[in-house]
Image 1 (cartoon, rainbow, N blue to C red):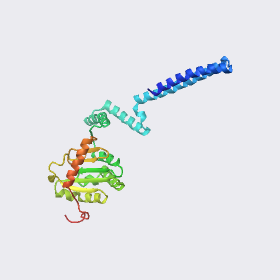
Image 2: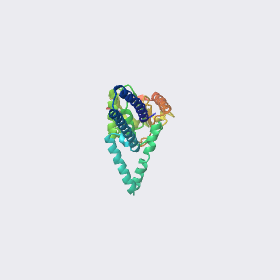
Image 3: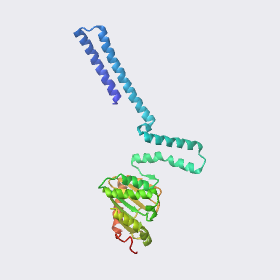
Image 4: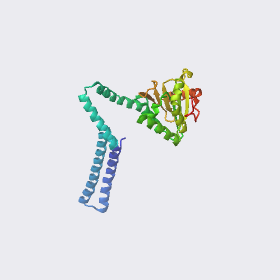
Length: 281
């Protein structure tokens, strides 16, 4: 039963009791007709205002159903409205191929949001952004496990996204999030190139290991992946050395399987010796 229906039934029952009580009191206290009419009209006026309140509440719900952005903060409403205006403008005037591609990508948003609502897997456009959202949501005592093939120094030291990603790792590790990262290397040259980054992360309370791809046989199911078992979330990259699209999953079975794979790879991995940053290879 809706609140509006409950309120109407309550007003109706109370009205019957009120009218009966009014006539009983008028007989008991010998009230004149004018007084009785004033009392009844006062109740009718109260009922009218109650209906107005119900109508306003119903109108508000209808407006929110018709314009769901009204439930957002003013800042989010402005951003969403600007996005819709830009979409409409490009939709009417698009001429270039790049514009068509951008519009097509925008139109996938509904599918992505639907998948997220249902707990299904979906594709996200940026490995750094996805990783930072997941890592930033973790609380002290929770874990963040990563198998990474981003073994070039510039992946960690170049550009705003890269440096912010590294800083977030250090902040969260300092807060008490248990971060484990296993770098997947192709050869010793990769080890030489990433050694400084590995030592820097180790010095910032991140448990860093490395393993050579040739030693893993079939243990590595994807190019790289990151998981948080507490958040039941996994980020999967299917391409080597790619910062592009990743698959986001909240499937408990997949996350559990990735956690098992992580442990299997960890048994084949080894730690880097601290203090070797400036030592010869």
